Image (tube, rainbow, N blue to C red; front, side):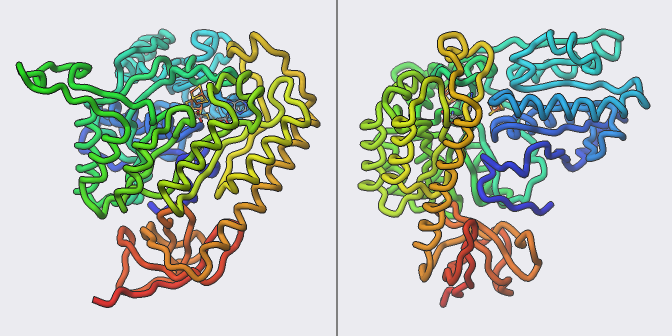
Length: 485
Ligand code: SAH
Ligand code: SF4
Ligand code: F3S
């Protein structure tokens, strides 16, 4: 299946996408429909869910009317994410009315946030399952078959699903997400993730490398390593479940994010490595030097700033200051010349003044981000901010500040695109462009979308040198410069 997007870890057009997989020869006669919302971690989790159920003989369908089990993998990050899921559940009601034996399940972050309350609020829902309980899904479905409603929202300190090799859903066979850790311990005051995903834990480094190697052997050419804060990745053989690695006298191997990046980069020079998300408080120079050292680790860092003002950052509990963030940006510029940087910004956080908002704008002037994801603050029940601070910035003001931030970002995105004009970019061809089968599309090392006419010597999954001749606000346009042997 072909689909192409700028940055899959943040792609709006994937929200609600139905996921399908190839039959595996096991059949129990039942069909699963699964759709996902939220971040890349959720899409990656849906692949784990599908693997667990495919192993029990479920096949996937793209039509929920036809399904025996409907799963919706949900997000709680902002109120509108939850509203979208509630509306979607209403659409499933008609299908369930026609087929009362159908099982409807809510998975993911909303399931974790609302727990059994979901069953009271949404009569349609039969199963509620949190992100650490997916191994229990076959049992839970059985309980529902037996006439009960079922809930498992237990969070775990250990679960990383390391041994489950995820089936790849809706894949183009070229890029894949690989989860390297779960949960988050940061407690940013605005954020539900620590509550919905539980404690931070890192996955066995060897299982990550084995999965990436397997992907490469299957023809994949790009992996994106995923975690809420990849810079705090830490794994050692002592944390492994089987103690076999710990033979007497052997050195205990401790893997941090820099060493993990290196291990994955060494799999093959033609395997591109991306990662998301970096945390400004934790990104080290060691990580930056590793990126600089390996051509196949992409020169692209997503480094969410949230606000450019130190007082607001403190209220947000981000644990860095404006100066610290600027120091990290300077380090990136020094160590990795020509590195793309993107960010997340929240406007109208509790008590944010006009001057403080101006500091977010001036931070944007300083960094000149290649790309940004920009949001109005949305109060989330149960978070530190909801408990401690009034959500006191009027909607209209939040909105106006967001518009200013968006306008500034558009200006800088365009500046960054124009910098590529006349340059040759190394592009991994992902498939045909959305608009035409006469054109290929792929991304540059710096994660910019590049479109260029199909060339008979090149196929998707290969790298091409593309001379950039024009650009729109979101796309570079050029032509392949064939390599002379
Ligand atoms: N772990 C990542 C962020 C994950 S959530 C990090 O620390 O950067 C993705 C983004 O959603 C956040 O960076 C933030 O900008 C935004 N976000 C999270 N909670 C929000 C809220 N309550 N209101 C508005 N935006 C929010
Ligand atoms: Fe949320 Fe902060 Fe964790 Fe990111 S680092 S997931 S914003 S608590
Ligand atoms: Fe991701 Fe949304 Fe959960 S952003 S971690 S799916 S709250």
